[in-house]
Length: 251
Image 1: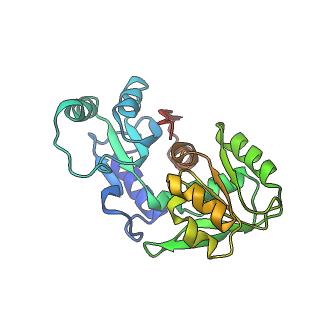
Image 2: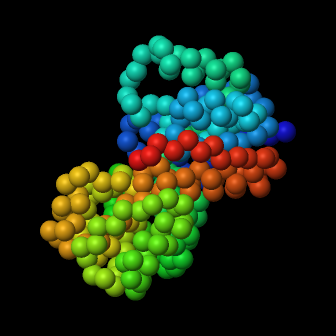
Image 3: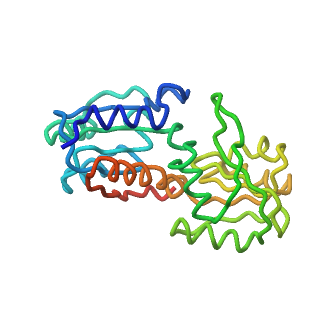
């Protein structure tokens, strides 16, 4: 039976946790330890009461998330937050979080996995933030309507298309999550079609004014890929069962 430190050390090296800068509240790595034994892996987008309760119900004691406990910033450990952590401790649940290191991983990352689901090959790293390229771009000629259909199929949910760019794409950019506010910087890099998860209201207006196709697949939906891929990889590596815990936010 693998020990917690074995999985944590492996993930640390695989995802280059110590090398990749991130937003402070990401707090990548082990966020809650357990008593050491790992018998089942869980994967979820968010650390929340929903996912922690689901992990406990399914006998999971190593939960991988994309958005960890600290995204809201400093919060008192009271009320529902106290109860959530109390249950995690009582049921010996370890929690591991990987944000930007998982977004950008060349094989297991959200961007790479979504690009593969869309059938994109020969992608290139794109759009630097925090010293890393946080997205991918690809030369691909496809109708924007067909691209929207493929994206809906890959995500399993509706996609919002703002069809303000060319009907036939040339250069597509993909940044999972909430990158819509970067639309002006994206178009400056010669992109005519931009796929991301969510955007502020003004980004839809901006898409029309600058003439770019903007496809919004949902912040949650576009970031289910990485945690699933990492959990499946660890399952093979350490001979452990794994399960995805689906607690969508609707965003």
